[in-house]
Length: 128
Length: 404
Image (cartoon, rainbow over all chains, first blue to last red):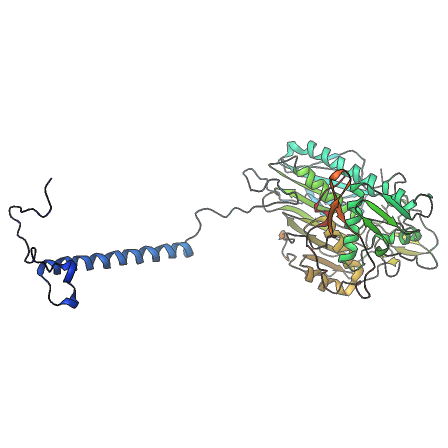
């Protein structure tokens, strides 16, 4: 297996390759002038850092935007539950749609219903 | 109004064609009024009706004061068969019904009082409404109401003072609707039911799209077609607008002084008795509809509002229950979030407002009994709570449990 630091035809090593003062140890700006190789690597690393930071910020901003502004993919399902615990807690398909009243709430003793055609009917207990 | 519009209701279910094929509707006479059941899917209706039959029969045997063989009649008669009083063990079902009635009394500061039975009898409502005598003398003095604090219920042990006649009319039908709806919903696990007992409506399971449409009416008994002896309103009241609302959860009940009227001594009486006076309530509201977490509570609130009079709107709003009040002149007042629009969705509170008793106790055989209500004398000023304060305690429905 070739070593990545092996001599290759056509490749020219940057000055400082064999220098003991490599960038990993003393190539910081606080150490004065660096070798051309160290400077190139440093620029590359800085560019990568900025790129990564920009990507992270962009993804976060986009995620936040969609979380707060995007409409839900599907309408919210309204769960209707009655007085019976544990019975039918989710809205399923095939629920009927009623357009006219099925019952009347009025004073006890008489129930008034309106059937097809608007015919009002009084239902009494006691007249049977 | 012609006689042809009136139906002779029998004790067998009669199918009602509402035009909706996916929903089955039937009705029959029950508990001194009519029972109406709607269920979907429609092919489950027979099973639902069977469940409702069972519940109504149980409640009738437990809590009807018009049946001499009912459990509550026997309890009120007492061991001597005349004046009542004493102590006895009642069924779990009746214990629950009485516990709910006492909770209603506590919640309303005594305005809905189960001990008004004697006052109702003295006014002439001493039998099934259809059989009330046509007229008679008005009692010279109002009957004294013993007061709900005189009733002691400790588990299944009921103690009544002599001369106490219980009337659970303000809560029993609602409780029956709650029980029936809850049990019937189990028969339609993928559907829903609506149970109406004389206009006290409970729903359970899945409601149709947008909720069950219910007509809220404030209508007098039509003249000329009243049950024998029932009399007729002294004068036809001014009409009020009707409204269709939609109910997806909870319950809806309406109390009115326009129905169940009869005459005594030339006066028109109605069945909502003010326990403070022993006379029919004489407040500004003629009809009140209330939506609540359960039907017993809805009927309690609507009855209390009729009796409370001017204080009713504030109390109802403080309880957070949507309500529709019709004044004697036909004007309508909405409180507590009652929808103003036609076919608006009612949104009753998810949890009950009535205070429960101290909690369940161990009953015979190790089975937990109903919420024990051991009513002790209240401190001075503890009653007449209808100014908006809610008693402390867990806010769950006393009728949320089911007992036989």
